[in-house]
Image (cartoon, rainbow, N blue to C red; front, top):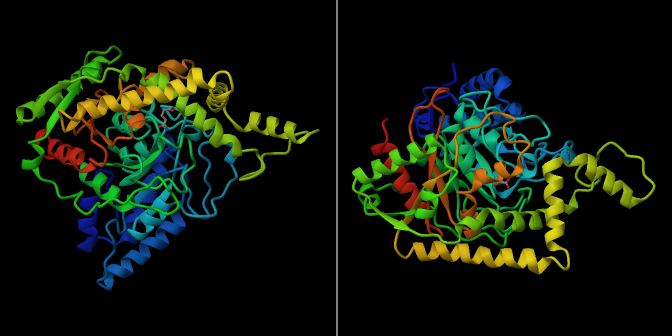
Length: 485
Ligand code: GLN
């Protein structure tokens, strides 16, 4: 059997349940494909072939016995390497966790397993999810499958490129400022960041706890909805998680979708920094919505231009606290350094174990939290965060969902922005405000087909809190009815 890298979860499941192939054969064929394709893409840091084949066998037995296989039964899923899977290495893309092996399953992993999913491996990421290109990974960059001289975006670049290249039918990523949506846009796949609190963060290596959310990558909107259905809901191990009725997430309704009022923030559309390709892409998508009868309204988010600055105070502050626990002894031991005192051991191992971007953010975070600067930076940023959130709430009095570009440019060349942190930070200008406000948002490819000559672009639909259904329903209409199929 040959692996088909162009299928959706729904298509694969249909054939599996019709017994056109066995899960075991499919997963074996998938690994044959990965072994060849990932030599150049480098989406995976680690694969879990033996376990995956054993899991596939169990799914086959259930199918033979006529038992339910779960909503993701037999479906190969890739996992960003900042989520814990018991007995499996988890590095967060960092030297400091190079030899760490997780001792328990993250809640999302437990839920995926309960839904019958088959975990294929751990995907590459920017170190501790800090970055927009997957180039800050301590284990080398991932390439964009459409053009291997380009980045896949980040920080969940491995998950995005695995799904784009068909090395998994879905993947999980984490999104603190855009790390699911921006790589989705650059790799031409669907990526969803749920409402803050929709998905448990238990067992996810924390970056900035008030912003982090786990979400799916998929090859279609319906697949993304199905993955969200599997992972969302209250978890007693994460006090910020909430009850979530996901039973109707897949009940798509075109008529209902077309009654949606779409808001266009004038600050995003008139603002500088958008490339020609992105501008053309979003104009095309918007035109398709208009022609289908969607009501489009201009809205204003007056404080949104402060979002990136606000984020780069809030995030380093929280990250510097979260990363305090990595001392090079707990979690995994780094090679012993010459030491005269405990403090020196910490300083040296952290100096060796963390890369430049991580060190930069720890220093920034310590600074904005230090006495004398706390009020001037941290408190001010918190106030600005509230104003940005209120901007969205005001806009949502007039419109149901908000439309914007996902990222300001298409995939850029490897190395192009590594020496310019500010240029890298601006990659997330359209996605960061959404995390600061805790809202759900999805990135959808403008077109169905892309190529090396015509790189992917995406648009973003932002919903009200717990409005995942609205953005999925409209996104599904676009994908099924409005986009050239
Ligand atoms: N690129 C952003 C950053 O570097 C977002 C990261 C993320 O969402 N994990 O912080």
